[in-house]
Length: 386
Image (cartoon, rainbow, N blue to C red; front, side, top):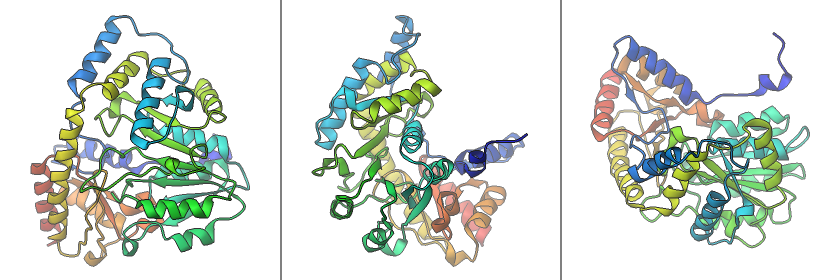
């Protein structure tokens, strides 16, 4: 078959490829510890599930508005206004089936051949994939361990050009687990203040921060409310990955365009899922607090365990639920070691190169798994590398 040229420029999300390989090995009877997928291992809180069930029973099983129900959009606007300290209304909100469509639609709406877009590298792989798909030039923002996986502002300023139409930032970050300090976001804003470009701020892990770390939104800075698209959702915070529920907050000029892309692709969002989302934001938050506290406990255990492995050097993440150790001391390349750990140790993880070329020399482990399994994974890795 002959495919459109853009298809050859699309990448993938390796986590799902590794998951499929791990499942195949399990089907053959091999024991696999899953540390590859960015999915909380907790059940969706009962009050959220109950709200969705009541919605189904009440007959909420039909089409809704493409951008989401007015009730949910109002609730999201109030929640984001409260948590970011910026005033938004329902007109700023577009609901999507998962948060990923927001980056997909925004990149489609803003970029074309001849444009440039800057994105974190190592970073979520769909950023680079979608920029390439549009035919725009993908310009990496290197995140290095020497700089605590934060933006080198001098290097960033050198790479901004008159063709830069979009800058993507992610805090807390995937795969590094690092937050961008407020002072660095302010410095970034100063560099961009007179530039004709938008900012896509991926804040999907904003509620999962530790030790007083802050997920500061660039939208709060003067002049950046209307230039920022906030990407957020329910998957990570409320363990709702399979519900497919995300949203974007954006100016009222862009929102109808993103809604039009929703109409042309998904028609609308699931009706009863939206009822569950309303309950998630307005109901008790005890489950979220408990989930973050457990992630915090696991964070210390996995970092300590990884640093006890010869050739590993792991800094402590201050957000999300990923550890990103440097493995150059083992003598292996990232993909080579990730495959070895999967097939020989039964530990599924991701090569750092799954997140871009600057991820070479690293491996990502998700600690969205039990302490028992994390400790067993460390033992297996040590045994294989011995």
